[in-house]
Length: 112
Image 1: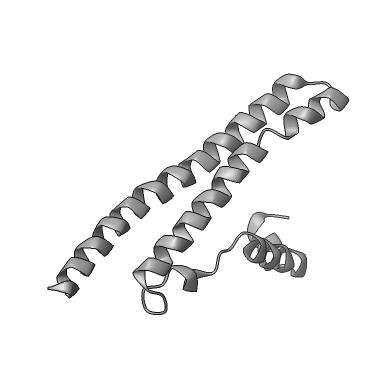
Image 2: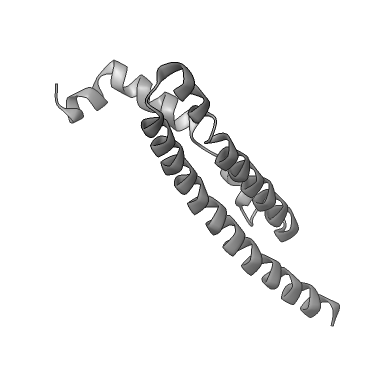
């Protein structure tokens, strides 16, 4: 069965629906139409904290190497997962700084 046939099958659809529900975020938390800039900055701090925790929890599989052996594979997958999470941490931190600067500028303009 090729990839397109799998995606259009009932099993494929349910799998992709499950994946989109598991790995999605609430876009309204970062929407300027429904949230204030202060709320978005707060939500970004929470998202960064979650990614930092996942960065730390990426080391947990190394503990399984005691039971299964193959230390190298568990260390490798942990490092890859840490690098993956690090990308999100950097993006969150970079964008949050920009929004904080924008927020202070907007507050200064409003106070004039």
